[in-house]
Image 1: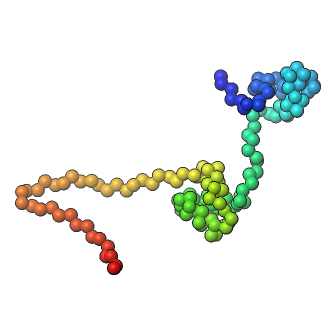
Image 2: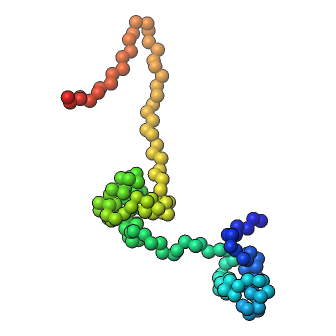
Image 3: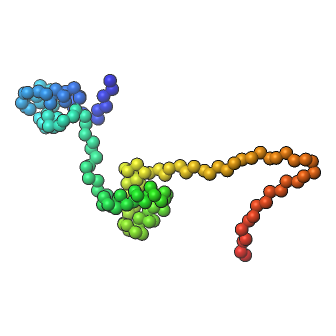
Length: 147
């Protein structure tokens, strides 16, 4: 079984589980396993043996939670590209919004990529076989160009 530990990890999941189940004092466990007292206390107070995320619980973002919900709603309903959505957000929600902050928000919420729009496919019909002497002409109407 492959265990994914970060570079500075001083304990394994098995050691952490042993720390949580041990009845010895924190100081004795630190001495026994050759780790710091703070490490022992940290793992004894946790309910799991896996590393916790280092991402802050509350990110420092430009928008508050309600504004973020509105931006995500606009993205999902209007299907605007990033630059167009940025123009809308700057105009109506937050003038100080940066493009990178908006991109991070959409990535964090799982809306960074627009869904692929299915291309309308018309029926492709093969050319009809005509008798010799018949001329087939296709007509395309072009818009008027103003000079």
